[in-house]
Image (cartoon, rainbow, N blue to C red):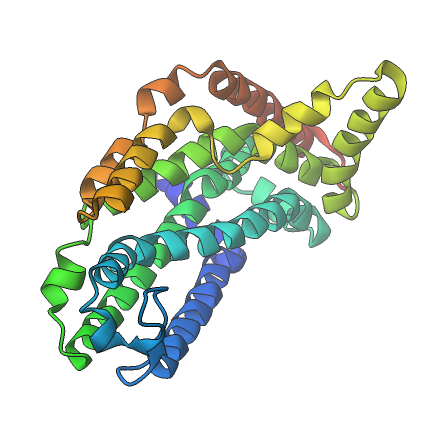
Length: 316
């Protein structure tokens, strides 16, 4: 276990994009959000589509509709917006990390050094797979929580400047525990769903003698086109499309979240973000999803093939 933890650290040391890309996106988000608050400061004007047109924030919050909109945004957006942006960044990190993971070892000949150490090939390949499955999502989750904290603190200062109650508008709406747990669940679901894709990218990285990204993309694309040309069907392309989606339908209760939001919209009552996030997840249905378990089997086959290639391929 100690050796494996060092292998995970090695992956982070050698592939700095694992933490640098979330950091860059986090910095951009902070800058853009700060700029927005400065432009639409306490003296700025905003239009909540009420009968009064554009008005200052302090005046707008006297309107029930505007007050409800502000509380909705203050409770959910600090978690939702960073999660969407950093998740998009994570997709690129995953692709380029995995396609380079085993190829880079051969390109710089460091694979020969690592083979001389008492580290077996299975552990070396699994460390890269676990980095994609767990380490990269955890760095991304940390970035989301840092962004959410910053946005909440910035909103608090903004509320003070316009003479509003920060507790009523912001802190009473924050899902302090349910939002981080829901995000952790969402990243775990995404990793499990993407497991066969991770395995395929590692296999392409182990196989390719050059440009592993093309080896990762071209064979599936060619297979999908060949099926369309020969069989006049698109089953493989549809399977890939389902597997590539970042949101697994069976893992969530979208209708429950919809009911919560509809109730807020039509009744005008405050949203309970803790309840909203809590009703969203559906781990039982996800664990009963055959596609998830089948994907893990396929991932194991791909990772096993990558281990075999690393062990027996002649690098001379």
